[in-house]
Image (tube, rainbow, N blue to C red; front, side):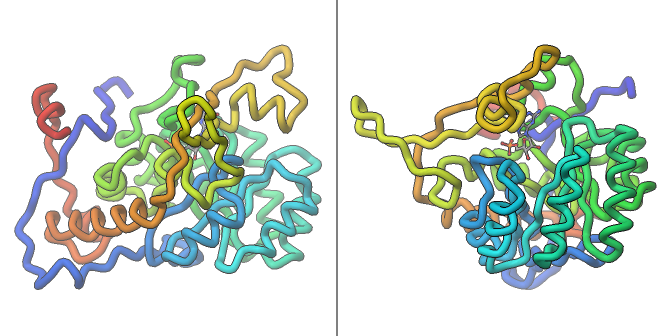
Length: 331
Ligand code: 5GP
């Protein structure tokens, strides 16, 4: 890849004639190509310990999306958390040998949706893990990642993952690009990976409803959000009051941060560097508005494209590159 790769702020979608009657008739639902994941709203919440436990999964599940539970708890606690979810939910599993026990326990508890993601998913050991999982979970939905190239997406498809998660380095608390120099600007990564014969989830770097519409238009079938919901009530943990300012905050942190390693993994081992940061975000109570804004932006976005469905939006992709002045004008 030597051509210039692009991300959200580099482009704007071009309006097209809308022959549909009203913006209320558009359908923002999505079913993945395997037919296993059917959502009224194509939103997944990130499997991070400051974003998705049962409260977030119930919140987003209620509104047509789906939560992806993090796995940084014991197997027993993970099963208990899964059982507290009132809607379909993804569970996450790691690639260590000991994770077989987690998979078995969650499967026995009735889990249907599994997420296996590592920082660099285009890797032999990840492929091996997915093949093993597929033997244990012949009919369940397996989402795998993360990758940012066609070859990576195709590799995960070849080992029978149902859904491919895309994003190397775009996350708001991610420092992979700074620490390693690796990554692919997210809209180009989405476009590349969407060529593989799988549905894809655009994961990371989504800050606005408009970013969601762009990700979908460029070929994602679903998007995963973390930072957009950080600090809201359904995220894990209680708000922390700052006595001096009288304001409250919550923590939002990368799962590859030093802080997560210290809390869950006994610290960073000698040869590892953190590829995420921990941040304080204002405590907020507007999770309903955030999701309503996403739904509204998506519906309106479809009408600007003259599209009735997300698939039609994808087929009609038409965009312009934005000049620096155009970017300022967009704000
Ligand atoms: P956000 O929506 O905040 O921009 O991005 C959320 C995504 O960032 C997650 O779904 C995950 O893919 C990614 N992510 C979470 N923690 C880390 C981390 O510590 N390092 C990196 N490289 N990515 C992370």
